[in-house]
Length: 101
Length: 185
Image (cartoon, rainbow over all chains, first blue to last red; front, side):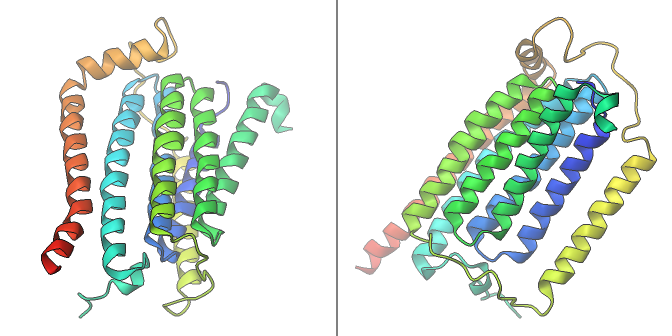
């Protein structure tokens, strides 16, 4: 309650960075989805921190909607992963290169 | 030195939450087995939930544990087990030359810039809201419920449509290959 918001914002920035690094370097589609979840959580933490800093509940409402969208995104994304896996027996995104010019 | 200027329980809670978040996140991106990555993800999500509670967002902390750590991670684990991809991935291979160092440099530069910019502008600038203090009067749950069903009512109704579309889309994606298989057979 009394901790400065800078601590939380720094933690969120580092969490976002770790998620972005994982998204750039891992090749399994499942792990990449988990990294997207990490980045979404970092943004949620930032929203809640600013909500506290400005005494505005709107930030927490935004986090609520981000969670709904994340749930929908995971549902569709994992459906796509299952669909791709049935055809190629692999979840590696490096093998999805038909559109490569 | 840091602990002397703030309440010690707050600092201890923050350090525990931060450690859970950081080590969980590092676990997600470094562990080879996808199942272990999902378990590490739970650690990160619980850590974020602790940070939510520390900042008077009790409702979101509960939703975080139930929806994220409960439903979404279980969905991940279900798909991992269902596909049988829980074998180890060779994380040392680099398809692009120096891919990892470039990614690390870019991410580090971006994060450092963001933190520097925020610190330079005293972390947050803007007007404080005079009404609607999340921690005053009503409980957090009543407060966020009132806000969602008044100010954000249209957005809330649209999320209902979004969830229906997502469910229908997932069903269609999962069914299509069955129909193709039947046509081919």
